[in-house]
Image (tube, rainbow, N blue to C red):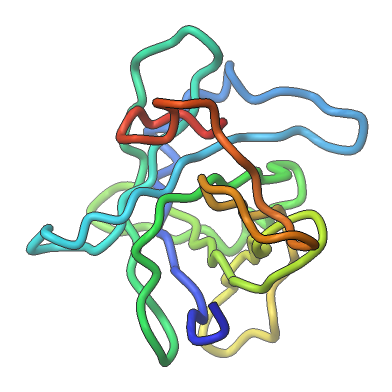
Length: 160
């Protein structure tokens, strides 16, 4: 996993259902599922919004691409984002729609497989850490990550 650098997502703010964001103890959270789409002629990743248990609708809210050197990540993963930590002044418009860019930066940790960092632009310093990344698979002893019950995480769009 040391070869994986990051996956950068453009998140379409107009496609989000903010009614399913949830207030946690420390922040307002949004959950997303990043799906590897290696056969896509356009973008090697897409991101869907998790709308809650029992909901089978997983709207596509953005696209992503591998950034950095090394082997691209071909695994699906969950992003848990502290929504109220995002700097909305860094949002940009493209074709009449408003976007923010989030980078899933991979690193092996005790509690997660990486972190979500907001991209603030080419001339900006490193953006704020706004969330965690977890792969949909069990990890070896001592690592982070998570196991899923049988049948979950297999193209169903659920983050857990």
